[in-house]
Length: 169
Image 1 (cartoon, rainbow, N blue to C red):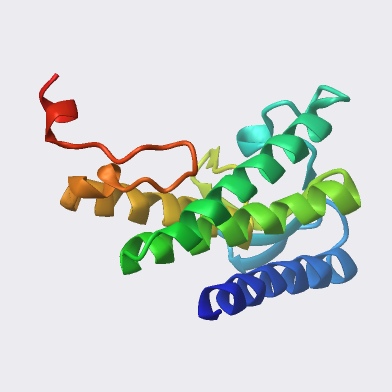
Image 2 (tube, rainbow, N blue to C red):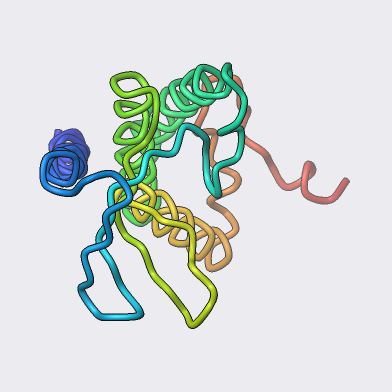
């Protein structure tokens, strides 16, 4: 129950921030937070990370379908594990995935607003949902590296529990 509340809270925060950005910042307007380094902007990305598939008219539909499928798989895994760290990581990834999925369905593009400049290099613009996905994925990798037995947990319905003989073959 708590995980569901946290997911809804994170999705709401993501959508509220995006709504404020869409109402208060003109498309491609740059509002300096730290001059020559950090700006708030209003950009629409009809693709995935680094605008992958943005040029394809069908790309947004493929990304929305993949995102919906991944979200279902994440939710199944989330509610089948009892490992606290894994639950935190999957909660973050799920909330981020749903936050961007809502944009893809509603706006046919994801609203990005955090823009960082490192000299002449401009890092791809991103949002809270993206941060949740990245930070959750990093946490997930750390937990798996620290405790490799997490890979033995059958988190999805079609997975069978691995035993020691499976590791040796």
